[in-house]
Amino acid sequence: MNFSKPFLLLLALTLTGCGTFNTVVRGDQVTAKNLREWRTHCASLPRVYSGAVYNFCVLNGEPNYSTDAPGSPAAIPFTIVDIALSGALDTLALPYTIYRQVEDGNIELHR
Image 1 (cartoon, rainbow, N blue to C red):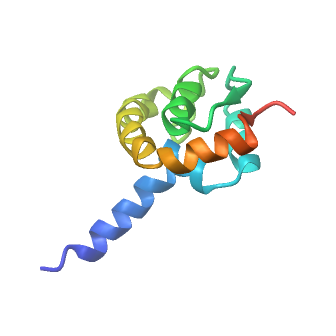
Image 2: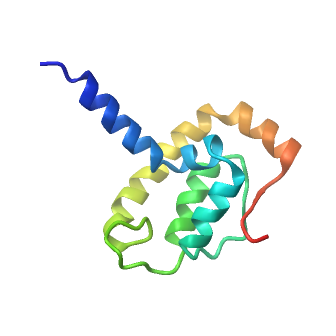
């Protein structure tokens, strides 16, 4: 049985919810828009370890009781696991994120 296609699909779906993917790969405007929609109390994100900080901001937002929302109680275990995964990916992305932090500064959320 070939498990590569389901594995790649699962990997793609997981990465789209990953904090590192949302802050490093997507644009700053998308990151800011997502966190504003989740009513987070964060004002900005540092680019270094931005994926882990992104997840902490999601947890720090106002509760959302929709079952599919990242800030919902059902999504909290996934967000906690994603903090660890994002930390590992953020470590791999350090050379790039340090450069972007020096060049562009923090990702501002409330403009």
